[in-house]
Amino acid sequence: MKINLAGKELADVNCDHAINIDFSGNYGIQAEGVILLRSEGDETALKAGIEGAEQNQARLARFKGQIVASASVEDRDDLLIEFLSGWSLRFPFDLEYESWNLWGPNNFRIVSMPGGELATWS
Image (cartoon, rainbow, N blue to C red):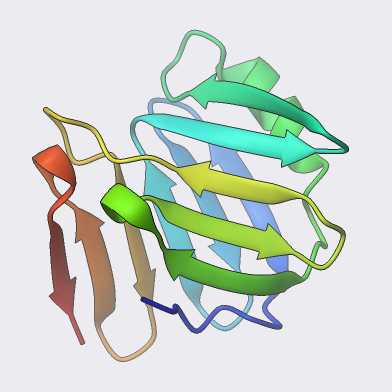
């Protein structure tokens, strides 16, 4: 499933109990699980939570200003966001928790439910 984030700029990041990422055009993501950050051939797992929040903030701050090339829900309902720079963020589903939710204008929302099933509103 393609998500209409292409051309949007990653505007802000806030890490505390969850990882919140804001994009231009009033889009955003809240992750309460793991994010896989891939840049320059390396992949790093970032886990949401107070522990490590400062490190997550520093790592994700490098993405500010990056422009989204594509966004889609992939196999097993993982959210994948790829940037023009070649960097990417993958938000895997969780077996027990809502791991991520994406929202946008006009009440658009996708929630990754426990086990990877998607709940959608538009």
